Image (cartoon, rainbow, N blue to C red; front, side, top):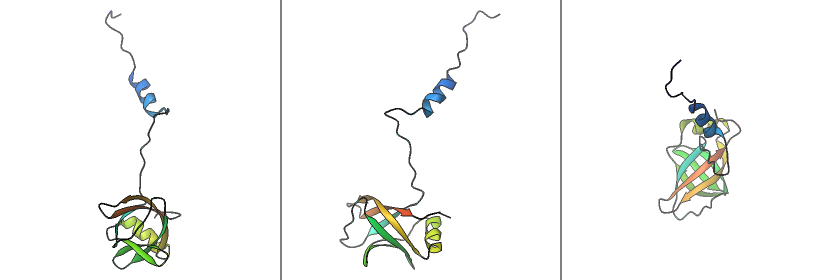
Amino acid sequence: MSSGPQFEKCWDKGRLDLVAQDLFTRLPTTKSRAVEATLLGAAQVKKGEKITIDKVKSGLSVSRGHTELALSEDAPAAVVEAIEANCGVAQGIVDEVHEMAGVVEISVCIARLQ
């Protein structure tokens, strides 16, 4: 037998520590159904507000009732296709409002994203 130092399996414990949740655990979040849109004029939106998203010729139009609030011309293709498959309309919730940049982040609410 060898009289050298013994090898300790500490990697397994480290892996377990990575997945164990505690009070300070912050899990990463994804926004696979998120869209960024540019606010139009002096449109006012609030975080948490429910809005309507329509497929239009130039991209996606964001509105509240009959008032157009923002336009997204570079939305992810999967989101645009899902809205088209949903008769061209979807609901959304405002996640973030970046007033200085004139940009709003919206979570798109569609039963199943294709």
